[in-house]
Image (cartoon, rainbow, N blue to C red):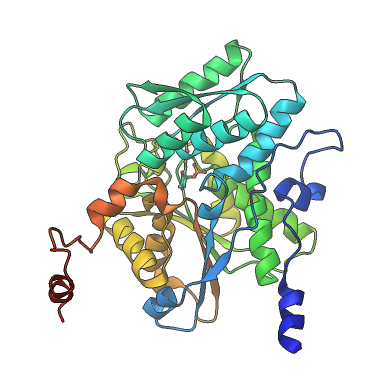
Length: 363
Ligand code: AN7
């Protein structure tokens, strides 16, 4: 029967995790102990509601990296960073985090038998991320300061104490994260024309560019995308050209004022003839609601900034081109923001009777 035959054909091989899948492009050897949760292989989903908003012939996809094991793209970098830390004999790791890095570091470190320490900005980490870090077994230190200050502290800690830094200044993090670009090319058969991506500490835009360039050199794609980086308006140092002392945005994941990969991100933007733009919290929330209610895709606010940015500059997208927006984290990370800014409301206090329910439904 043709049906079962094609079903068999499209049934994929079990995914081995991104280190195994892309081993030839990664700095691992046969003896590197691979700490994996089978991360990567996330879907590239066509986004027709977004295409309609552009209103011309443009193909739009979202790379839904919120479907990684801890719910964000950080797992791509963390499988590499933790595997290399284990290879080097590390017993403990440390990071500063707006939330997602801490969740990923905690999960992979515990899986690899290490102690994870995480420094977070007190009061600015989404609930789901905190829940993860705690349950995975991280030692969580909330500091009275922002992410930038926390990063300064953990860098010093790693210089002075026997503990491995797993923020994206650890080069293995970017090596792992570049596989996001590999997957986009593997799915499309080429690089997209534009890559829209949220920018906080600027590691991921750097990593994607590394991945596209490496694949281009390996002749896996025939072109390179314009790298379009989007920052929240209240935390847009790369757009302003100077650090922001007190970053503020509803997108707490990218509430970062002095990105560690500043120069590398600028180099990626320049080499790709891309650009940086800022998006307001209102634009972020609008994209967040559109993605959920029209595409059925629940991402966290920071992730929606890639789509908010694409919609802001949509008139600049050449007709006939292909755009990929990276959705870095899962919407379940931040239930408070979803409930507070949803267009829908719960109708409460309804009698448990068919007539009452029918009436509430408008019948
Ligand atoms: C959902 O977890 O910095 O520009 O400490 O969680 O590579 O920093 C998170 C960043 C985008 C920005 N989207 O990526 C952290 C942290 C989400 C994020 C970013 C983050 P980078």
